[in-house]
Length: 242
Image (cartoon, rainbow, N blue to C red; front, top):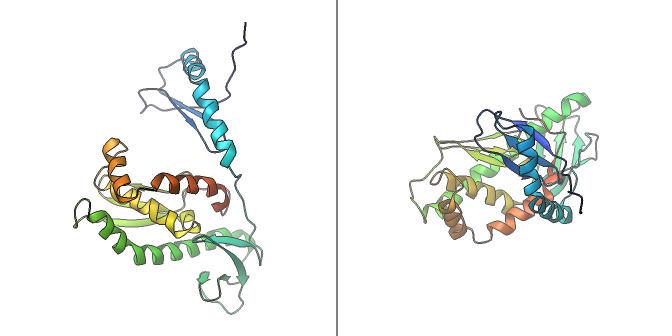
């Protein structure tokens, strides 16, 4: 008799869940989310039944997964900015927060203690992100507006440090984008922004959402896969949600 294959997984109990869900992360980790009233034996049976599906996705991710790159903050260290690797330069003459010097393609930072540099760099990404969103949002609103409503517009777009998500859209029309997203090439940043703008019209991930997304961006799956492939290289520090 063939021995049953055992799948290692992380269990997360949530009172908000009504069913068991199984997720395979890009690193191959299996995460099982379950309501508190389901016992361990039932969870094991569900995981065992989904083992072929789990192994299939682990094999797919193994082909494209790149482990996270946690960068140092020494002068000369490079960080991704809109698809380019940009060196960090300590500038004795700089006053105020670090800046992305687009003309010379460098991140300039004044001399500060090493432990304060991660927070300072996040502010640099915030500045890059705000400028980019300000430049491209009108164009993306026009593109999405041709398929839904020209008056469609988010109430607010904010940027924050998020380790697990690229963006989100609240039911009241407020969009949040991850700071590390702005390390990705612009076509991938645009994909995430369009994804969240479509949520203004379809606040879910049902068939109608993906139908509209595909009409607007026929290659969205390719862009999504590309973003997944480079996700690890966009980490600018150990995961930290602020």
